[in-house]
Image (cartoon, rainbow, N blue to C red; front, side, top):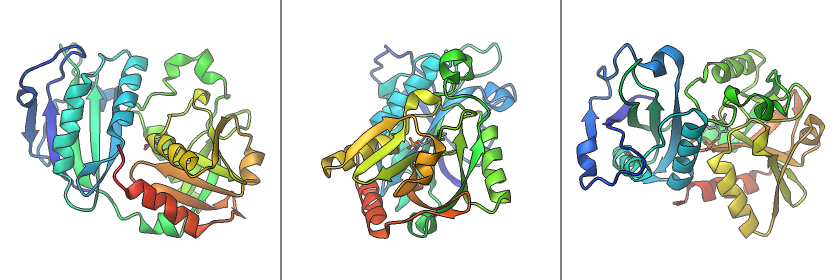
Length: 294
Ligand code: PLP
């Protein structure tokens, strides 16, 4: 999707309180070159990002995204982001994302090799039309992620809970899913537990209980999953975090992949076996996700 807007950000220290935030932002032509070739984000994927859903100019769950940005920065030894500055950047970009559904992206890169500061920017674009995956559902295959469920504790340098710019592996998994005739993938740990999709979290239903993989298993803690758990709890359902073996997913009453822009996509087929879909219930989840959420 073509970018509608781009904003370069002169990153402030986390504890700085500038009187004039506007002077730290420069709006640039989103189609023109803006980064130098020495950028470590492009050379090494060394940086972090967030993708925030926008509905009619309202950016969704901004604080949860900013919290995760700060968490990713900490895991990656990047300077802590100035939250007030990033919040202001989101507001400016969201206002430029146009009517209907959009997406604001925040990027914090390690910067230029030997450079003095990180590089930071935000973009806004219209979202793709996700009506089909939300209503018709998605076919999913499970793919081995190649490490055990305890890898994050043993090897924190893998940065497994951080939303880093290094998404080549995630994109390769999606291509493999497409090669196998599916729409999406769910990663499995090498010891057989379900983790997450390449760009979404997994929620499954067991009676009146909704279950998602525990975030300490080397996955991103999804803002959409967090928001849906709050919503489901308010509707009287039980919500739990678990270490989930593949068989539990196969036996689920229903399952969804959830993320900030595509929202809740029901899984209609898992590794070739049909999974039940409650279209009305799924529509109620997406109605909630499309309503203004802070
Ligand atoms: N897991 C991964 C690997 C992701 O890339 C994403 C989103 O892009 C998610 C989970 C879902 O996160 P969120 O709901 O915050 O969009």
